[in-house]
Length: 327
View 1 (spheres, rainbow, N blue to C red):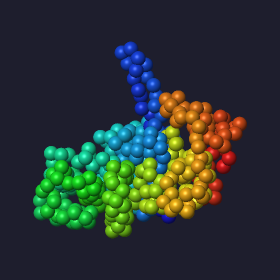
View 2: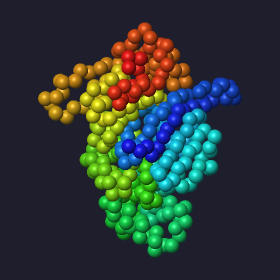
View 3: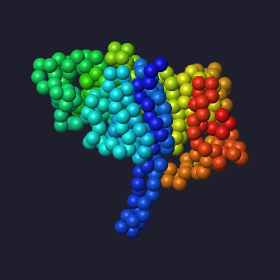
């Protein structure tokens, strides 16, 4: 399968200033040498605890955040583009932003309350050079119908819609320029459960209609299992396991993945006693002072003597990538 997006040794460090006159600086390691590929037409999920760096990874890929090191490469066979830590946000090729679009978690914050839906959706088209109002209205009407809204809604404002409808508008804004990749950052976490199912089914329908590739970021293991083909598990800014959803969910290899899946709610009463709960000790490490060797070793129930010296990297075993000394 052809790779459309390649992430190579991506790293993001935030500088926190403190002390008298902010003279002291502390490095916060948000993303640590993350590498993976996204295949054309698939849905790759990134899952992990809050603060593990999954959203920062997505923001570095789209160019909202400038990576400290590493590179992002896009190639769909007709257009290719690569940027790294030397490329500032205002210098990123605009065509790349037409190919890769972003859906934010909170539609209330991502939609401008002062702009009508027509104005919000037409902005990307104007940036592409489409200025004829009749052409813009046709495109806006079509994409609103595709996400399950009436075309006459384009003259309304965000405060006139429910949370689920606003998220549909955010999806429409991402699709208005016919992208190849959509990064969905916790796209359903702020919605009710019943509305979540509707949005997930909508995203799957749109993927077939628009021939999309998804990078789906979520902390909800059930959502990832429902919509994704492959899943990448993150802990403390690093990937710990990467593989197909079937393999990872049925036979997790990394101790952290086992702990995550054991905490996953089981809907069927007869199956609730089939999985043993994995209890983690201690607290998540401070990202400004990561432990030596494996980041997960202080909490790992399978810790061994070599974990403190382990060089943290993904190792491929049986079409699965695992960052564990036992792999």
